[in-house]
Amino acid sequence: MRNFSNDKSYALEQDSQDPLKPYREQFHLPRGKDGETCIYFCGNSLGLQPKAAQEYVVQEMVDWAKLGVDGHFEAKHPWLPYHEFLTEQTARLVGAQPAEVVVMNTLTVNLHLMMVSFYRPATRRFKVLMEAKAFPSDQYAVQSQVKFHGYDPETAILVVGPREGESYIRTTDIEDVLEEQGESIAMVLLGGVNYYGGQAFEMEKIVQAGHAKGCVVGFDLAHAAGNLLLDLHGWDVDFAVWCSYKYLNGGPGCVAGCFVHERFANRPELPRFSGWWGQNKQTRFRMTQEFGAIPGAEGWQLSNPPILPLASLRAAMDIFDAAGMPALRQKSERLTGYLALLLQDSCGENVEILTPEDPEQRGCQLSIKVREHGKQLHEILKARSVVCDWREPDVIRVAPVPIYNSFIDVFNFVTIFSEELTQLKTQTV
Ligand SMILES: *Cc1c(COP(=O)(O)O)cnc(C)c1O
Image (cartoon, rainbow, N blue to C red; front, side, top):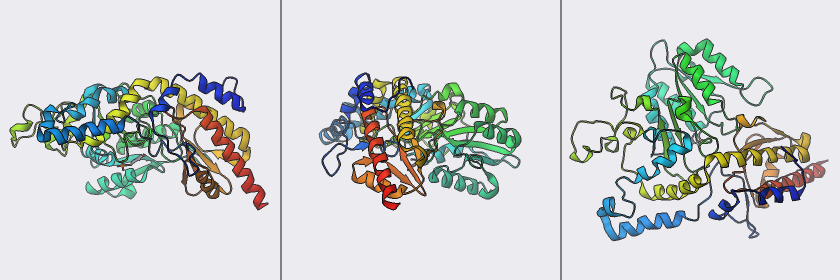
């Protein structure tokens, strides 16, 4: 980083020049027991509430009270096409054509729906390639799909992990597995960013390597949407799913996203689990027996969607879209780079950052392996109004997110972190 300094004035200076600084004001920041604003580094787990979200939700409550069923057509934002209000912004967020995206269901549900269509194992090609330490829900979903098709997860799920002594996976190792075993792999399913170590996978290269061997390539973007610059269409990704309550700040359990590449937009022969909300809009209310899918991602919808969470998601996406991913990503790289440098500067050998150093291979999260006293340290941080999370056996995950975190947040975090870690070490000597 240019002119990096471990001095507080450096952080203040960076904040004063930050064009995204005003966005912090648009969120509710939790307060600690002492009434002080928390250092909130947990946006990778649950993003903060946009102040406007309440108003957006209340609007729907008011329209429901006033209009009853007529709200489907006459609400200020009619419920019938409500999910469509999110289409353009969602498409920009992930680098897709509007017809390639839809907000619907929740993440694991969408993952299953996508696998119904895109995991089509056959005798010679039945395997799934995943990353080591994939998020548990993804592991369970894949295991159950494999079993559903009559295969054994032990032999059908291939896992690529870091090499001995390394903390993240080399892209070339993923490419090598594809090169060697690609013909037996039906589907590649990786996280866009691994939730544990924070590694961002080189998606475009992986799609190329997978497609070269005839594999379907999908991504779980739970930790990538709203974090990385994505170009799903351009990278030729087959399908992707993500949730909206982490970096996107949609609210707990909010409606998830789904991407299906344009080339599958009109493929009625693709197997899918269908519902009436995926039915062609012209004929949906004729209540006919025959299903004809809406072309594109919308055709995978099942139910009429929950309007209240969609309303809070609209509030969040309006902010995201106004800030724009390119500017957010630019700030994010600097913020996380600053965090990494400060940590190394003040904690040295006592910590190890498991997340790749290359900005291209990480988002905003850093996973910090604390050699000793990690769990105690995490508890003390919590008591000091620092919100971050603990992953057994020895990792503290922190995510300075560019939309509401600041350089001074990072500075204060590292000050508290190193102070308390030093304290813990001297106590036990
Ligand atoms: C957060 C997360 C989930 C959670 O799934 P839900 O269906 O939203 O509960 C699943 N997979 C990954 C990779 C995640 O990061």
